[in-house]
Image (tube, rainbow, N blue to C red; front, side, top):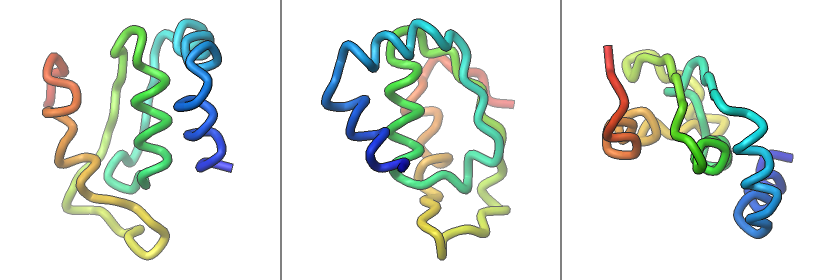
Length: 86
């Protein structure tokens, strides 16, 4: 389901734009446990506005066995350079 959603947002820019404009703010909890598909979905959903709030701790990543990619949280500041990290 996640992969198909990521592909839909990638392949159908009109759908991506509609959803990005509908959901002006995106909150992701436990960002250190997101996988590649979730990362792509998040990037797509904030493509129109970059209003993202992500919580997480790279030292508490426990879901590698189900595809979580620690690089997502480690690259957060690079991916969203205007974000404030606390």
